[in-house]
Length: 212
Image 1 (cartoon, rainbow, N blue to C red):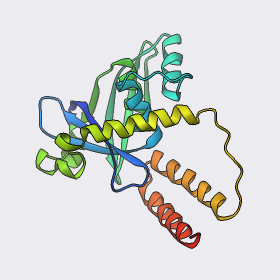
Image 2 (tube, rainbow, N blue to C red):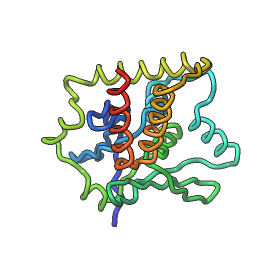
Image 3 (cartoon, one colour):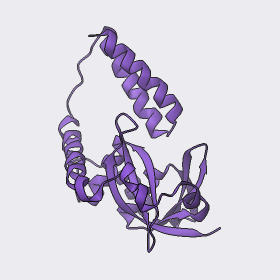
């Protein structure tokens, strides 16, 4: 098996998953693309670094970068190593500490962009899940949607900073249950458990309908 280097082609709102984003990786020197559905927090973390946005307080991946560096290490590469039951698995290589750490692809890539480390995909994964340009419009339209995607990501980043210190009001009844389900949906997306996410999404839609 061989590793294939990829680069980040773009981030776009995912039509298939509520509150999720599609991270599009492109084969360096090739035509294949690899779409990976990630949660909004991870999309924010990747977009923040790509756009040079510095939050007032360190985000989780900034904190991890600081810890790794202060321990004497550096991320030399990340690799998406496996695809099992529609779930991607990644590994982070940390030089100086002699570590190979299992991770979700979204977290691995959020660290990779902070360390300017190369991103790889195993050829078996790209062979199985890669798409060719003629099908790319299902995930991202480079000509028409780039500006809209960047506007949406910047809006999310701005919203994150604005809400960082805002207290959340206590609510009761159906709204409270909806908030809990939305948190569970975000967690399911972060875990890339899309079957569970679909069930939670259906329950949210049912409650929203009964609350009208």
